[in-house]
Image (cartoon, rainbow, N blue to C red; front, side, top):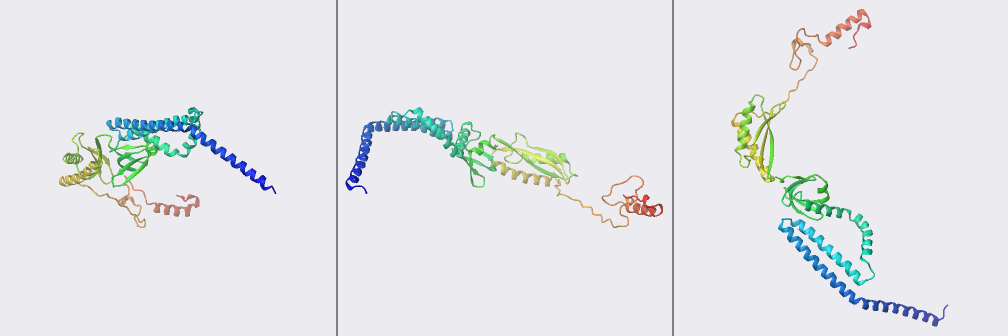
Length: 336
């Protein structure tokens, strides 16, 4: 067991070493205190400069009606300036630190950060590209990824769409940028169409004229391009006429005018005494147990008409062949 005096000396030596280390840290901090103050001033200046740059970018793009792009680019410019100020502040505090070495170190670590935040960075970049290229704008009505509605806001992570039934869809920007998007308000006008069936006994030309005249009288249907009524198909139970008309591209106009078209066309065809038939189906039943089954001379509905002598029923031919086979031998029997 060590002597108490020796143990006390060892403890005193460790304590003196710790105090010397703390004293050196305090001396170093006092020595670097002016550097810290200058670094803070530099960082504050660059923060204010970044805020000013952000406001200038936002103001410039707001004048061009690109508010969302101004917010995203303004934020990017601001934090880029702050990052440069942070590098300069770090070199002021630690003069031995080179910005190139720090950037190289950050470049290595950014790979791991990129994998960890891949989805976030992908959505951010897609949102920036959408705002720059502007395939659609705030207030446009689009259809993407099964959602349809009005674009409410384009953020750095997602695009917000207000659906027609009063809900909000939040769609990641990467999905919008990589998938097909239908911009329904890209143009001022939009064409709609509807198929109408009339009877085979009705006059096609008259029906087309009645439908076209009804379309022209509907409030909201544009006169140019002119509405059309075109013979389109010879269906099983009716002749199809396709009505086509143009309206303003907003969904509320398209929906309400479509309802007016249905009502006006129905009333116009009724007034012109043009039939709109139901689907008709014909079912033919043959029980194949009658005495005359297969006799073409006593034709029923569904049997083909035969010119000249009618062929004998199959059952009669088979019976005669079987009877002949009894006299001539099995080889004479027809297997058919």
